[in-house]
Image (cartoon, helix red, strand yellow):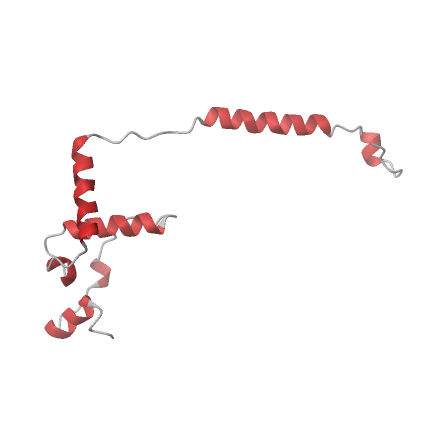
Length: 121
């Protein structure tokens, strides 16, 4: 294990502690968007008071990261977010209309489909 790069490995080496992996909790649900999940986990970890990651404890995070975190906090306090929703009805109607148009163009009689002679268009 590379103890120079991993703070958790360094902590285990120095203290002799063992990690109970079954007692760990997930900070954000595993979803389709890995990038959003990792950002959310970083924000949650940044807010923790008792953390092992020494880079965050010693304040060695980048100024950009600290600035972004402060802006997120300001935005959450200022106003609730408005969520936009798609108008599902119009999309469903559009799809139905497209299907109906295609069916109208391709209407054939049963005899045309079942006969062995070539179909004339």
